[in-house]
Amino acid sequence: MEIRRCPSCKQIYLPDVDICPACAQVTSTVSETVSGAGKIYSFTRVHVAPQQFQNIVPYYLAIVQLDAGLRCMGRLQTQEGDLVRIDAPVELVSSENGYVFGLK
Amino acid sequence: MRGVSIIGAGKTKFGVFQDRSLKSLIAEAGKKALEDAHVDASMMQAFYLGNFAATGFNRQNHVAAYASTAIGLPNIPCTRTEAACASSGAALREAVIAVGSGLYDFVLVGGVEKMNTVETPRVTEYLAQAADWETEAKIGATFPSMFALMAQRHMHEYGTRREHLSAVAVKNHANGAKNPDAHMQKEISMDKANNSPVLVAEPLNLFDCSLITDGAAALVVCASQLASDYSKVPIDIVGHGQASDSFCMYMKSDITRFEATIAAGRRAYEMANLTPEDIDVVEVHDCFTIAEIIAIEDLGFCKKGQGGPFTLEGMTAIGGKIPVNTSGGLKSKGHPVGATGVAQVAELVLQLRSQAGPRQVQNAEVALAHNLGGSGASCVVHILKRRA
Image (cartoon, rainbow over all chains, first blue to last red):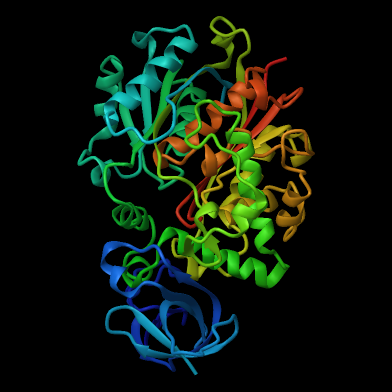
């Protein structure tokens, strides 16, 4: 999975952060590839959704604590019999249009 | 900074008003506040308006000047504040700073939202614009889902249970049933709140969520030294605080607390030289039941993690240790987003003047209002005191 790292202070961010907020000087972050593995920090199953997600309700949404050391929000792809719980290990499945994780 | 006081409060009924316009709502609230303060519109020197999403709900922008014309204010500076659900709490604080600085003696503050113009999925979409589009809303995060994530984690860390969430809803509906201006003046049972078949974002069901409401509220604030000329019971604003926090929820190190609430509360308590023990009545931002539980913890009314049991034991009911959301809260009174912060203060003005009727808290002298924006990226707290 792609993240960004500030070459000056070494802080890591999601790809939408191209200028480091922590540094006083304008510093461009640099792309880096890390493991998409992590565990669930919290989760919910969404039943009432905006128009563009009507076709996939109900869907799981989770905050994932990545092994790389930062958190992100993503949808969870689940299969029959999956037990979604806090601390369950997950892995990135897709990042094409937002993050989608699957249980490991 | 000199002292600032509230001398007038006005609000519309809250509810679903298909036949009323945005301008009609703010005109009614503004005129009622001026009438309550026994002042003329021509005396106002500035106007601050909180509004979140008229661009979406009403195809209307430039809303402060729009509202000023509707109320009939003179050609004074009109400024809109937008901080998601804390939009009008922020408007009030700007007015307090402006009067406190000595620039103005009389300022009108308003808040308005007319949300029942589109279907629920569209409302959900507009509200989600208070979250980060790129990393939250784009993947399907909604406001209920944000607070559901907090609830799930709070349950995991502190043992908060379904019945604790329901206790907030039951208590706030009991209070709202006594408020003739509330959107839903109806009591609900514990059983009903626990077992709603309508799931919104698990573990939150229909009864954990505030309402989609139309409404407006307004306040007249003035220099404290002039207040007693206009009001028999001036309400002094003795403390205020505003704070922000990481914009995205996943960036927060701990989603069972709101750093913005903790910081805004601390600033307000320090300015007022008061502690949570000194507060007699509170309006907190219960956009979802879990939000009230976290707010009473963050503001120091109970220990961290104990907000659920504290509520279930009746400590926050009228007649309890610290009555919370006597108006019915956002849960039962309703949540016209941009109007909420000012409406909370309007309720507390009634309480401090002993005009709250069947929901009156006995001997209420000091009150606190807590207005939260987004998933906690903005917070505004005001502390009010009845002048002795």
